[in-house]
Length: 484
Ligand code: ADP
Image (cartoon, rainbow, N blue to C red; front, side, top):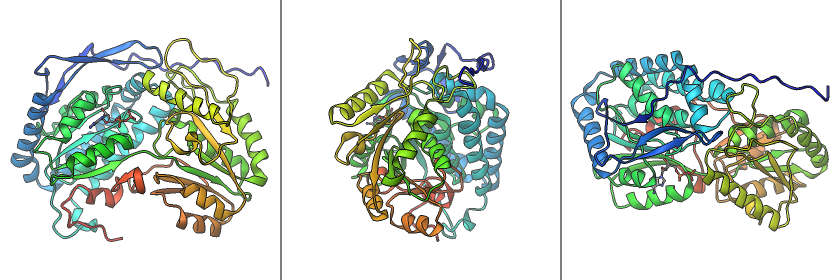
């Protein structure tokens, strides 16, 4: 068995018809940016340019916001809720029909394995539209007050780690609750959002209900500061989230901010170790570790440390790193050269602060941006790799002796987005879950998502919740409080 090799199983690219260039999607049409500026989006696995993307600046944002405002006042806010639901169902079905095309484009633009875009990103995005389609005409029964009222025009800014899925998390609840949107995808992954613009056209969505503008942080900041925006929904780094919070503090704009994380994945001595090892691998190596809720701090009870580490290293040696379009690949490309540099810098800080680095032997492709799956042992709480979000396939391993020590170490972070608990004892799981300061807690599993389940963080991991009934309330006027 030692020579067992997988034959290549490449997914075909032919289904993805990527244009050479893309314009902005405003008022239901693709329009040229006023100043004619553009930037390239690149396949991070090959460094090939995939397409030229329009760069939106202030004038384009003015146009997008006014188109969203006029769609809101003239059409969308007047439409019976049932009709809004129909559009969402239509979008969900089209996404389902075009799922393979979306998966291929997502993998080419983002670098994630096709297995993940095909089996996770696109199905979850579709599920989000189906879920919210169902809510559109039942908001009075969502526990958000008797007469739920939409906010108006929402500015939405999303990151590059789950491009279509984050778009779905933003657009589906906003539309279900009667708002219109201007959405800006991340500069390194705009393609599935632009493909989604075609889906809006195909679904016959009224012009201006969804507007997609492409650009970088300056474009994002201009959207945040536009005076005719009622709410900002942002997912991204804590640093940018704080900047957004500062810039809207003197306005009436509301906000949901879904920011960074440094989740503890706690393995107690009574855990099923083989299952826990799978959960550890899934927790940190899924999506190259580009996951805000990744289990990036492994807390091991001291007496099972040797066993867990031995099994973990063996399991990591089986992770297949390489071509994201190969259906056998587990770990794809890092999304950009900037992100690769950030990961390398933090990993070097781990070395220089005295932690021990280990990676399995693996041959990385010569072109593109790659980082081998890595663990650091001998990590102490003061190390940068135990405190800062690496957002890559790098796991920091810490140990504990008593359950109380595990909780103290787990909560010793500025973040609080997620956590994992591995134990055979239900009472211990409930005891630990109660004390962990994290928005999402998984027990004996990790990285499970469902549109009905609210997602969000404590402390510097953000404000508000997305998904579920709580996520609906975030798109309705502030008297709409979810009854638990
Ligand atoms: P990351 O560090 O993971 O790249 P960012 O927070 O920088 O995450 O980016 C997330 C999204 O926020 C992207 O769409 C990016 O263009 C946008 N963005 C970056 N800077 C700003 C800003 N100052 N204001 C608004 N949006 C921004």
